[in-house]
Length: 189
Length: 88
Image (tube, rainbow over all chains, first blue to last red; front, side):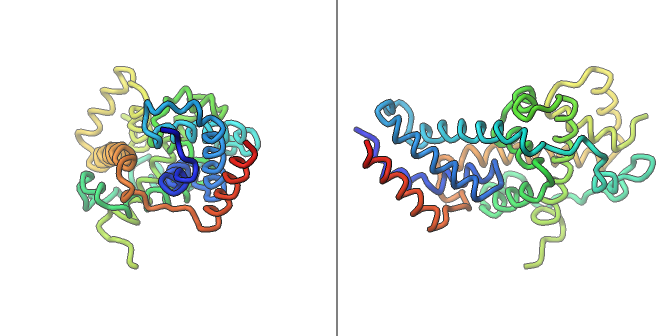
C-alpha cells in the first residue's frame, strides 16, 4: 500500500496544524510547518513502510521541522530580554514575598478537562498571550515533554535562566487559566 | 524561613528536577502550613496531568482538536503538493 499525498492533507492537515500551532502559537509559521512536513513526506514517501500509522509518521517529521524552526530562530529573536525582573510576577507577592491574594480553588476536576475542546483552546490562547517566547518554552517542556537540558541547548539559555522562564510561564499560565476557564468566576461571554 | 515567592519557584523547579534534600524538606514544611502554595502546587500538577492526557488522546480522536487550517492555507498547501508531485 503506497501512501497517498492527496489524502494526507484532508485526513491529517488539521491535526498537524493544531499540533504545530499549540507549540509555536503562530498561525502563519504553523501553516508553513504543515506544508514543509507534507512536502518532506512526499519526498520520502518511498521510505514510509507502514510500520507506524501514517499520522505518527507525519507527526515525527513535523516535530523535527518545529525544533529546527525554533533552533534557527533562537538567535534572531532572543528567548527573553536578559532576565529582567517581571513586574506582573512581582505584583503577585507583597514585599515580604507572601501571596497578596491567593488563588481560588478551581471549579473543575482536571479529569473533566478532557471532554472540553475549549480547555485546549483556552490553554493555547493563554500560551499565545505569554510574553516573549515563554509560550514556546512551556510547550516544549509540558506538551512535547522535552528535558530541560535539551530545551536550554535549543534556545541557548543557561539552565538557571530556563528555570526562571519556566517558573514565569507556569505562574502566568496558571493565572490565565484561572481567569478564563477554571476559576470561580467564569469569563462572561 | 522561605517566603511564598521562593517556595513557588522551588515548586516549579521540582517539576523539572529532583530538589536537594534540604529544599525538599523546606518545601514540604511550608506546604503543610500554606494553603495558597499547596493549591499552587496542585494546580501545576493538574495542568501537567491534563495536558499530558489531552495530547495523548488528541492523536486518536480528531474531535478533540479545536484548530483547523484556513481554506487559504489549505489550497496553498494543496498547490505546493501538486507542484511537487508533478515534478517527480
